[in-house]
Amino acid sequence: MAKPASRIKAVEFRNYINGKWAAPRSNDYIENRNPADTRELVGRFPASSSDDVDAAVEAASEAFSTWRRVPAPRRAEILFRAGEILIKRKNEFARDMTREMGKVFKEASGDVQEAIDMTYFIAGEGRRLHGFTTKAELPNKFAMCVREPIGVCGLITPWNFPMAIPSWKIMPALVCGNTVVIKPAEDTPLSTYNLVSACEQAGVPPGVINVVSGEGEEAGAALAAHPSIRLVSFTGSTQVGRIVAQQAALNEKICSLEMGGKNVVMIMEDADLDLALEGVLWGAFGTSGQRCTAASRVVVHKKIAKRFTGMLAERVKLLKLGNGLNDKTDVGPVINEEAVEKILGYVEIGRREDGATMLCGGSRAEKGDLKHGYFIEPTVFADVKPKMRIAQEEIFGPVVSLIECRNLDHAIEIANGVRYGLSASLYTCDVNRAFQAMENMFTGIFYVNASTTGAEVHLPFGGTKATGNGHREGGTQVLDVFSEWKSVYVDYSGKLQRAQID
Image (cartoon, rainbow, N blue to C red; front, side):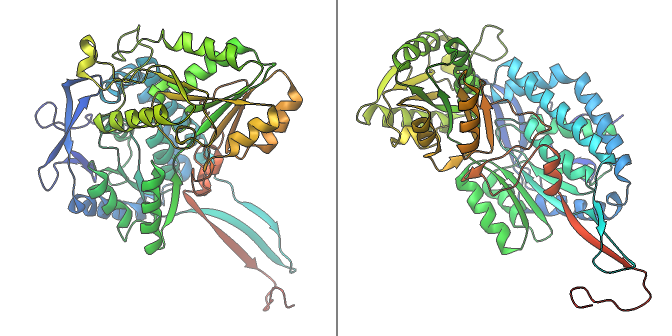
């Protein structure tokens, strides 16, 4: 049985290259500390350089010629075994995730469960990598198309879903016959190590999965630019995604981007306000607002705006900040000091914008044990205008803006009036309104009487506009990212036949 992620000095981890845990060429490491209590060192992870990336890509390139020939159902069987290992170690991996990322334990458990779900779902596609046959336009000629693997895939993943999102990329890449090099976020590498360790234990051959830990500017940039990488799949900020896309274009790489969001909950006057309140609390403050699908805007019908605003402010004040391993904690820390500064910077912008009123929160929480972590009070702004910066720009923290609307058409206009188009939600008891909004919202995901977060792995995940570049993760649609179509024609006429001519 394979050992879990190899350690040098109990908390010092290595890269995983060609089936072996290898120290970085530079012998430099990055500290991974608990954002709820920075006194706790979770581990030291490689600060990899381009040399480490070169070694990982070389291993993946060599493994590709063999892995692509393994029948897809056999590849899928390995993924099924990985899913079983994840189930057995779910609580252990969730605790590791809470320690390194900060999200409360029940959310970390959900993150691991999403990786389990994705692993099983994609493994099922090992016997369903369907192409199709069709009638040729000429007699005595057969026409069909099949999926083919792409090659070596470079995967760059974020810190907010440190096991789920790597699974969205690794599993479909592998079942399609590709090999991968993954660069996890420098703030949360352990969860990716745990996922890859499960794959190793399940029997994924050496070189098929490779992990190179390090900073985005060094290891991530080297991966995106490597000439032997055929596909780059990136999840992160729009700013960095634009750089990745530009680099990929220089070498004709396939590029899949999943980037930012400025998501909205729309609440009509006929809505179940108690249900809407629960949805806003979960959407805005789950994972401390650090989700690309977070509900950072709430558009409320003017007839119920005052009532709902009071309900929300009252409940938000009761949310308990703390270590995610504490059962009583509602909201954990944000990821690091840089995030604290960015979020508080937006809070200050909101304070200064003419007309906006801060109802609660707005400060760093530093009482008691909270002083050792990166905690920000859940913050609510009311009387926000649609064009204010706090209503337009992605904050990625526990900050929500309340905006009044006149009617559904006005709500949809406000909701669509941002550069992003990931997720939207409508609370109403009128099915006609639900379908009207469903048709007119320019987002990749839409919910009725539910929050803006909660995607399921068997449906496509992704957005429009600045949220991405048109690709989707999740669902069978992700197979179109990690495979290429080959059209095949078999002419058994015994003579030259010219399409479009004869």
